[in-house]
Length: 91
Image (cartoon, rainbow, N blue to C red; front, side, top):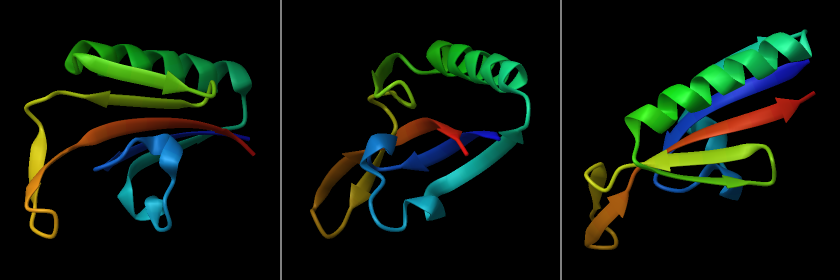
């Protein structure tokens, strides 16, 4: 089984801090690797068009962001970046 996970958080998806699963927006599961790869490519292409910045790590994590999408953090008294993360998982 293959999973493509979309998460939105104030950190990149490769950090997977405790409770990262609470930031999952959408998750798709596939039995067929070809279908999973096709969906992943479509998702990455759409995200690349929507967000001007991106980073890729470990062949299974992608982060997308725009400098305009920030939120105020009261505990740190500063703006923090919002990241849109894609995770490729093989189960």
